[in-house]
Amino acid sequence: MKTDNCAVLDGEGRNDYARYMKTDVLLSLQLPDEKLIHKDEMMFQIVHQSTELWLKLSCYELKQARSSIEQEKIQQAMTHVRRAALAVAQIIEQLSILKSMTPWDFQGIRPALGNGSGIESPGWRETQSIAKQLNIAVETYLSEKDIDLVNLYQSQTHTPLFALMESLIDWDENVSLWRTYHYKLAVRTLGMNTQGTRGKPIEKLTRLIDRQFFPQIWQVRTNLTSSVY
Picture 1 (tube, rainbow, N blue to C red):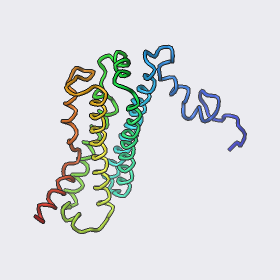
Picture 2 (picture 1 turned 30 degrees about the vertical axis):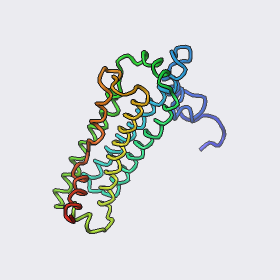
Picture 3 (picture 1 turned 90 degrees about the horizontal axis):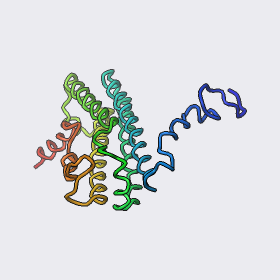
Picture 4 (picture 1 turned 180 degrees about the horizontal axis):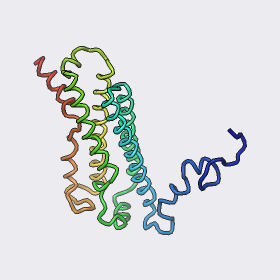
């Protein structure tokens, strides 16, 4: 490998970092300063664009996890799911910067959104689809191996399978926390009994908070409690 500063990779960009990361393209995806309708629009757009990137990573990792389970590589599947859960955690973390935007500031940005809504996120739609497929792969594996989750949890042996189940809970829980944070942020910004960009009450967001992608792993907790009391 060359040790000088000359670019060796193909593509556009002044150096190999720019060419590999495609920074010219990436940084051109935001509106230019002169086209921003509000001073906070740049922040708003970057937060949501980066959310799509984190969702892409989460989706990719869930696909890898599904493939690993189908190949009975449980430890590997667990690693992928943990990474997917951390990607969702990053989405939650970055939302905090939006609290620096006042309710009136958002009203200045809102016209630029048209009828756009987070529910239309292609990354989120794809992630939901893959999560459902992953759940089927998990259920199939447990059924074929005749594994009882209550017994698995009662055994107190932290096997790779146990770690996988807990990592799936981590991912599911992070999605719920993301939905909760998003709802609270919407209330902080828009107020109660108001409508989102698609004309629907923001309170509708609360209906999604407790939805589960891996219900059988949540149910085992109820079963464990019921077995004691």
